Length: 230
Image 1 (tube, helix red, strand yellow):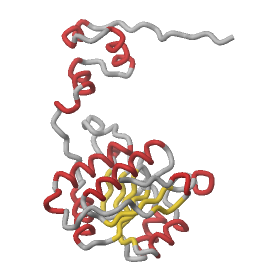
Image 2: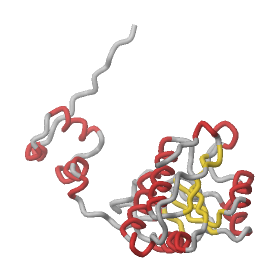
Image 3: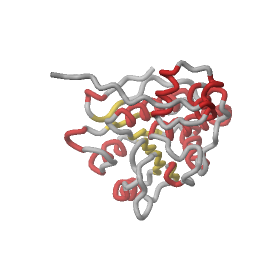
């Protein structure tokens, strides 16, 4: 017999009364660790919060802008989980909006698992990609980055996973684990990191865009994960 267990009640602090929230909503916020009125306002009304720049994002933006201006083929390397697929979709759409020649690759879960793999990189590089941009992966991909560099191709890494003892030899690495623990962006998921890169690129659209919007990307990888993006 299945019995539904209600969560334990949470005491709503007096400071939350100024928010005029239904008790159910206030309790949900508190259970998620949102324990101050300021944090609740930021969660409920993100548009009212000024955008926070991501430190050390400049080398990534400069390399991607150069690739777009020179009509280089960019490959966004993602992951098969929800964070990886949303990161991939977000970056591909942003790059397409900027007129980039962009393709994407999502590894086959049962065959490759997570990470960036040399064998899967080879056909992508053989088909002319000159810049690899990872999302939700890549922070420990030393072998793959070294191989890519040996082919004369640059790598930009966006990831949120824990750092290894050393970092890959990429043109740029964007990872919230490199930020101070009290930084506003220190706990971003992979799609959040991808968003900050896309946000910066789109904010500088006049400096980047030199071509008309391109058609949907060519897709490498498993057909079940092939998503045609508008």
